[in-house]
Image (cartoon, rainbow, N blue to C red; front, top):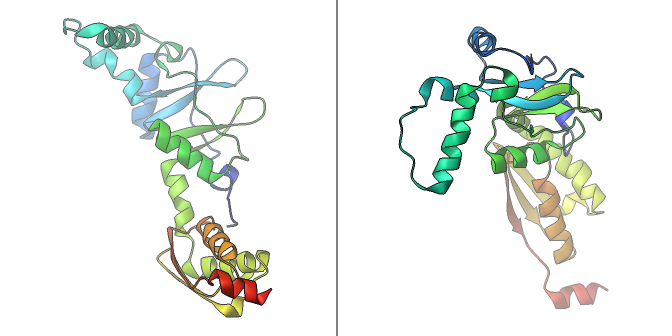
Length: 223
């Protein structure tokens, strides 16, 4: 797998979805039958317009109509939950608009979206907004299954070559995705760039910087 893998490298293309007019009963049955926790909702043109999850469907069974509400904000939240509890179709209950990614977005971009929005999955859509697949947290974490030997080879053959550094000047070790860099870069800037690029190699968990940086007067002397 190359640096900065894209969503199309890890996404699932076989996706269960429902139309906006799917009924509550049908959705509950499909969630249970296929043992999933959510699916995208599509309009008549097969464009993704939302996502329906177990959490979206729970208010119908779990909301207490007589529960007290404190404060304006609580009142707004409570009212929205009641609206969902009264919904009968996917369009009524779904979370919308859907947070989506494209097949050409990077895995890193999807990971940031999931983390910042607290999401477990992201529908993948093409340029027309139509469903192309789905990517989950498990798919994102799959990039860390890359063998240590492949990670080390990429750093030595690609990263150091891009920086025009002699690989013989460095020692690169990788253990459980953790990269340790040792050696003497020609300049501090090159050393920092090496560390930065190594962090972006697919499968790297972290980078331990053990480089010996040249003193400013040493760099000047080389020139």
